[in-house]
Length: 408
Image 1 (tube, rainbow, N blue to C red):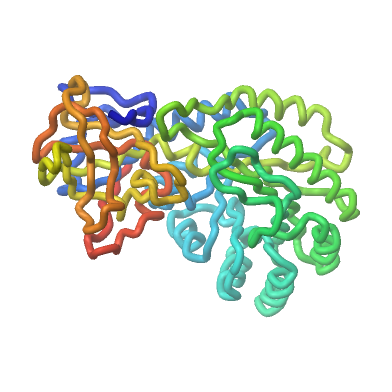
Image 2: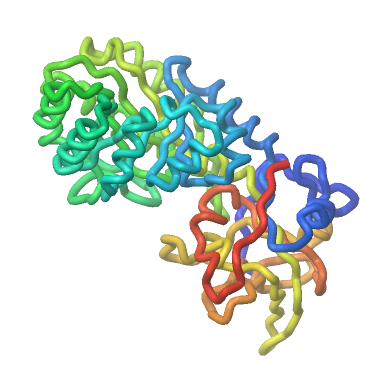
């Protein structure tokens, strides 16, 4: 048998079934009317936000990167838990505004912003994180057309990356941000233009579980911000330190030590240079805030044996859970945390593969995992489904359509 990933804390059995926020999986599916179904737990969101607040220095603001999960009820719940939001497209900006979020709490990063997106952000009063000199020119021209003073920051492509991160967002040639050596001149142009200068956005990587690597990156980020602020010749009003906080997905993964990160950051804040003394800082987190709050429920529609192997075929699959299938940036496929929700407290009785309903061998949610005996009609739960699931998977592939979503 191949090991399964660790099930996050806070999920219990109720009458033998998986319970989410105190409600049985079967009851949630009955309320939704069908499977597949994403269920997001408000209790988990609140617990994670409280843990983070307790660990981090009071000076640091917490931003939610809504690319992780843009479901409207989740956005509205997060509005009471975080200080700001980060969007990566005009579409996300529109969703954030439709959810009632204050545009003054929103920043907009991402390469290749269309002119219409720049105009929408400027009109709303959102901070634009500029990714190039050309984008600066277009943003200033858009502000002039609209008669609105734009709020502009610069996304910096740092000279380093986050060691051990799942995705490198900085260091070397990147489509993200402006190379560090060109930032001071660009900052002086922003300030001279009369735009509202909003500082730097420095993001080096994502999905790291090594606290020491994040501590080192944050120290490098603070040093880089200070150097660039000095070279720009103006106070730095705001600095987004990025994120990179990961969650355990796979066998052997250990939870990130956020207390160690917070302690090191508190020490660093106590020794800031004059150029950063009055700077407002934030961290930008997505999956760390919402990933463990989500469970994907899918029903077994067939059970079959092929060459001695058992296959549990479900009505969901990679079109909703691309990452769990191993097709979202994973080099070596490992098992996510997966369980038989209908028999959550039952002992392991067999080795089985959990596969989806798509006509492709890539559609595999668990490979040779150990499970209780499961039959047609039983529910399967895929955990850590709160981030990069419903909105990051190819829901239209093969015409099966999107999954339902609910916040409980």
